Length: 546
Image (cartoon, rainbow, N blue to C red; front, side, top):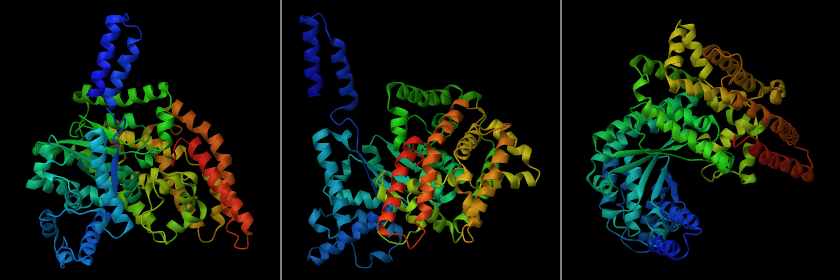
């Protein structure tokens, strides 16, 4: 307000004494101050739910070790969820950073203190959201609420939105029940009243696809949004969906405008938030023209969703049953592939998966946890999707889709699937984005793996699903080639492939040479440099395929 007051005084002087010369420059600055305040971009704080659980236990243990009153009873671990929540809500202590004894606990507590500092200096808008990754229960939400209370915040007027991130297929199923329970909890109802009856909910396409496969993840997110919209409206809450959308379709990217335009009236869309990750920021918003074009695309999606709502065919029970069936089949096929004993070893052997941490090009660590052994659940979506992309196999973008379509075709229901494609924009958009993932695939790059006695069957399994999906989506769409209806997009991908494929060939050669256990140390270092440096070029040229 102080800054705007001074700028208004300057403007008045220019009008009165200087014939309004350069007033457009002052107006521009006034607009920027109104939009960005003194923070420019709000900072979100994000941490995994399992960390919050560990931090609360660490605080309790540290307090007791220092002969201070603990915050948890000794038998806390034996409590059920509601008992634990009641226990946490009854805590009435304030701690300091010294009341923690692990690095991650200190870091988490310091982040909560930092939010307060930012708000004091820059206003509430500077930092007002705390996102809980891997949110699996109402208890996970209350743990964060409790941490703010422990750090001295007045939870009656907590000026921070607690944002659950539902990612896995199971978490998405539980989301409705979790939020309904919280909406009924008196202390959380009071918190939402202080936050203008508004609740932001984040839904993770990236980890959803990694967990459940492309078709099932997208359908699970769609149905979760419908259910969360319904219960939020019933409780007088304005829900805002914050979508964790990445660059490629398998991380929720692809044709974002078509995706939002395809959502029905049963999904709240008054305010939509989405992440723009990695090189997508530069490629989509790096110049005035590209930024203007892409923002127009997003805005037009919202407008068309409203303007053409009356003409849109709503999902009928038949449509829903069919999407549920297709999602279920594709989920089973994908889960079966994930359980293959060579699933992760295949990625480690033939993709740059192990080099993501070394290259320092992801927005997050390559995996969660500190274990030396790679566990699928700890693997983050960016290196997971990026590795399949650099293998030019793009498994997360189509695997299971062909098998699902084939199963319905075999049972004489192909006309039902074709009707679904014709009548339901959401399904059509999913198939369009799946086509994009397949067009970015190039199996000749890794055809040599067929000869490997251990990993050849894995390559053949992926190729068979690709061929099946490729054939059936073309038949379904009536196209002769992938992305036939989007010639500029098709040309763009094929043009980038001319840059990417030579780099990928170099990368595959280097990975192959490193399999030699007798390789000299200096050669090994050089081959590893080839892998990481080719990754830089591939990710940039492929417009954030990572």
